[in-house]
Length: 387
Image (cartoon, rainbow, N blue to C red; front, side, top):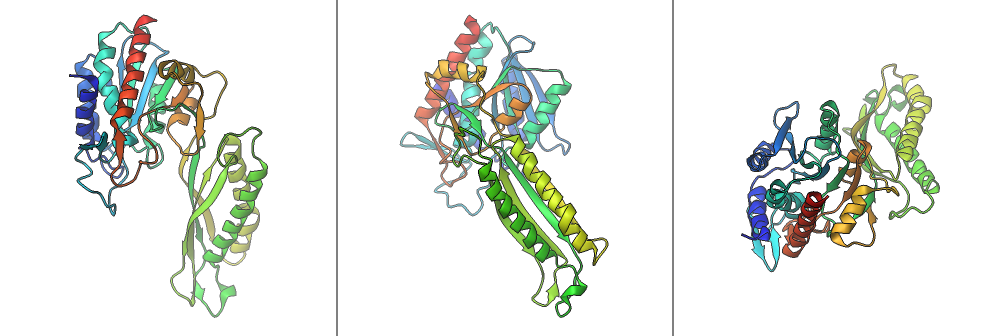
């Protein structure tokens, strides 16, 4: 059977696991671990504290540092309230496309890796080949964050990572980070006729948002020279402001959901320091002058590191040689690549399918994209065997 046929069959199996981030991924992880274990891979299933999610870290080839990681996330976004033409968890093929939830984001890449794995297993590899499947990428890269901690604890140090998010097989060497926060305001409820007797949580939330909007303009002035992102600066936006119960009640509780897409870690630190200083220096003293236990707490929902372009990038060089690409791009959407980079690996994002299809009803990956991915992976197997 041709590798593309194997890949299609495996992709159908993977799509049939409804690994929405709110649900368990254990069955898919067990399925992949069994496949790789049967090839002689050392498989490590690393379960989270809830016991319902797990990462898989499987190794073919020699057990030493300097390995190559092929990484994909196992979770998918929900299908609720989307208008699908057919069952989203039953793959179907039509007009050179394979349809199903996760087809491009990113079970197509995982299927290609599993299909080519027997080729890696049959070779005398010069360095380790690691297959890494993570959980909860779609809700903050929680699995990858735990994985790099587990690898550090096990003293496993790969050299580079290829993250197979859908890029139409273009090499992506940089992307912004994604930081999500919820700031909660606790004031003092009271009757609307005597507003000075209460602490209006909504009003303080509005002042907080106004400060965020001021800082958003400051970020534009901090645009790095030569930034290739679009837009080139760190972006900040408010997604939700909630609070209050009635027209005539002073609201005692409010919250603001906001996000930051930093081009650098320095911008993330700058914004958090500025916002926290504003709370400590202005908002909280005013609130507590009326009600001593009033409070403002900024909760970190997720802080996903960006992937920063670097001059010396072994992952970029290897993937460029395998694909024939003459350059590398940057994107504004986030991936797990920055976490691998922070762990000390060189990293690029390169995988089959288009991000334009991700998260949408009737999500698909083109068969031609999977074939291009298979060609890259088989080339990698040849390279590791010949080195």
